[in-house]
Amino acid sequence: MRVPIVELIAYSEGHLDDRDVSRFLQAYESACGRLSWVGESTAAFDEVGPDGTREIGLTHAFLAPGPWVTPAMEQRLFAEVRWLVAWLEEISGDLGLVFALRYDDRDIGWIRRGVTDEAISEGLIAVWERDLERLERDSPRR
Image 1 (cartoon, rainbow, N blue to C red):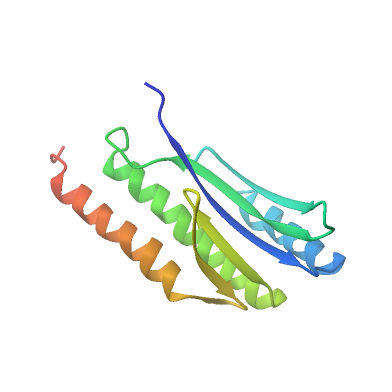
Image 2: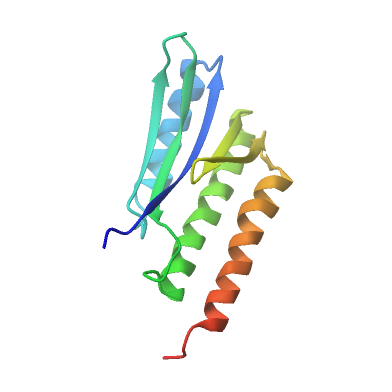
């Protein structure tokens, strides 16, 4: 059975100067490069589209929720996502950037200049917390 993978993608686009892009990539390498991820992969990107719009951000791929994920694994994945959101808040505030977040191919909200909007807090973090509580409650004790 092939286990599905989902992605959390955070990106900022528009008129980004080289200094901010460099600071973002250096901060990513410094903070994220030394972590041990449970997820499949985490990577930063710096891309320029056909229209000349520059986009920076990160992708984090991991196992989709399902019967193949134990409560302990789900807890670690959730901790990674919470950490990434907090890290993006810090970088957003430091650089004055706005990051859009996509989870599982759905736009979920924004982090604007260090502040996470309610859509991320309620639509991703709180929902995941409730799902994790249900999973832990319904799992057999070992």
